[in-house]
Image 1 (cartoon, helix red, strand yellow):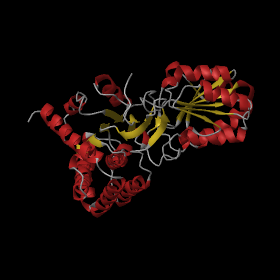
Image 2 (cartoon, one colour):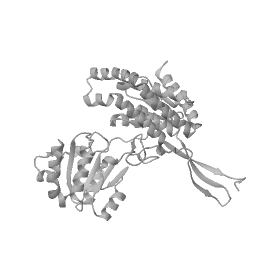
Image 3 (cartoon, helix red, strand yellow):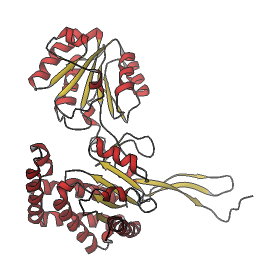
Image 4 (cartoon, one colour):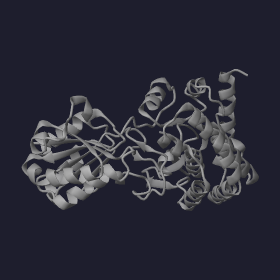
Length: 418
């Protein structure tokens, strides 16, 4: 069978799964998720055994220790995957919610009902836990999912999907509700992106290169964010101790995430008071600092920041520092270099805070809070499938509600168009 036919048949199977899910009640979906969680823990030994094949291959390829760690499964991580499914089951089901019912002059009522999107394709790299997380979120929102993980995790992903599909089937759902493109052939991605009319949405999760490839080649709508170039502006009216704690958290707590701060902007009026202590604290945490001329005038040991550095997503303990003349200068910098992911201001001035919220055009804009808080769980969504920087359909963390859409419903008693 050629790769085009192989992928097409997988998509048809997912379409059947979507029809099965459309008829499933909340109780049935929750029961399936609970069964999947139990099955993952019951099959932990098998999953770890298959994962070892991927680890050996990764070591042979010379992948970094960090990448191998992201790839690895153990009892604790499998328990966390299972617990994630239990937590999704406990979330309110958005499907079937009816809102905005309005009675028209002719007596009919018009409103909106929240419904599944249909078939969602997820293309991702490395972490096998994404397989269970994505399947659980899509299933709870009534969507079938087509998963295409990276070749480095193919044995782990195949084993996880097998466990999930068996649990779905035993509880009355079509197996196609969780479908996996079980080939390392990269052409499978290209063929998957052509399946308009069968696949309704594509969500890529991975590096900027993968996301750009998907966005440039897909005939299907794509929800994406290319990178997280996030900023914090320390205003002249900031509480400097609060600002120091927020900036340190945003860079150091977990630097390899998309919502970590990559550039710290500091108001010129408080730069001499704020930067020496902040720089010392970053240095103690082994952060490499790159600064503008005014920053380097305050501390000459800071490396020189180049123009291109301000557009970089480091995902590491590296930080740009720029002294700006005022908030307008800071917002101008953000408008030029931000990836519209997460940007924050630290200030005690209410007027400036409100201006910043209104004028900075990012998926999440924060006042007196770390950019690391832009996260589905932190925002009360319970879980997320990713963070979108698009402006159509979903923006910011994508939880269950963002994995649905709406349709108009009309309740009449014989009304006709005159």
